[in-house]
Length: 524
Image (cartoon, rainbow, N blue to C red; front, side, top):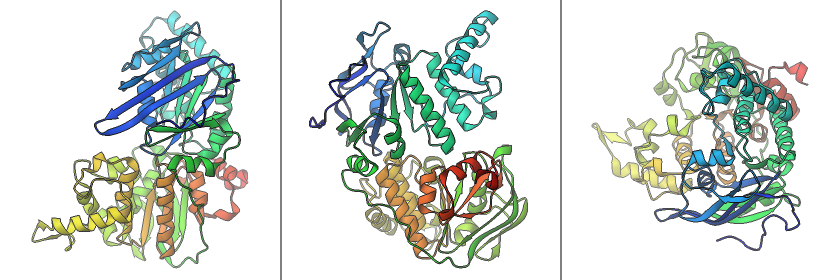
């Protein structure tokens, strides 16, 4: 139930209510995903919605946006006259017409259409007569001028930067005259400079009366941008308070129900190179995600971080290290042995452990059990089968041990892995990789979408791998993560990889500028 000792918006706040959720409850069988949640949002207010994975944030926003119907409770939203009216449940169309807009972390854009065409989707036929399109164009240009959201409207979205694509997403919502805008992890794929620009835009929009619900795991952004924070834990609202007077530690503790120890990266003495790239070229379906002339060295006992905006060559680098792609030119060695072609099995045999970017698509098979997923990469090993017959009892025993060691929240080794939350699924992947004690760990977006508790656990285990002498290649779009864990950091942009630089001599601004294509000497 709600913690009534922590009140909602301050009683002296005279701004009009635009959204009111009362007693929202949603159950999925025995699981109560939302437990009598009350939430009021006022015009011009920027409210953060925080919580661990599985806390109920997604369910609550899905009810608000019409994807789910609440079992109990009501949603009221202000109409054009400012009067609160009930919002019909289970209708995304009704939510859109009522003025609720949402920008998802993974953009919902048609990449073959222009920005202008994407904004118009669902509002006008794309073949509308010129006068109607002209009026639409004028409205969009006015919105761009008022909000500061600059983007090229006339090129295919696929050719736009990630930051421009996000601006198109926000313009789509503003074009529909939304009064409540939900931003779901909006800075996850932005450079620091783009994130600062987004924050300025959100403040400007709020200043004109737009109510914003800001969902993020980046607590420093929450504290800098939001005036109020609402925390869900276990489906219930446990806090609703001003951000003034809060700090990262207190918010993290509210989210997980316990104190989160600070991350510490003890000093290390790197050993011999475990991975070496010399002037390597790797092809990819798109020009941006290729690697050209890349040189890099990862030594045993160190973590080398790769920073960059998504789609600039990280995928090609990860595929090369994992054995999913071969080098078209240059030299690659792993543990001193040359690597000449794509061969995932050979990489596993060479003790390369891969934490893939997408745990759903590449890291697990949803129809299989936790135990079966735990041995996916070593299914042919003698401890897992003999004479072509799986040793299921032994596999279950080892999987149960991993479940206990990695605190995987699941019914047991025979549970289907698709039923697990993202954080628990990632723990299974971590156990599969790290329990083999690889010499080289490829950690590609290892904490994407994870809450602060799960993220802390992943970081602890990567540092433990470093401490026992493994080399770790950490590819991440989270600069806080890179600076917390990496001994050295390289930046990839448009397929070109910078030299790896000591992280102690770097700052976020410099790395952010390099991510945008500036040379190291220009960014310094």
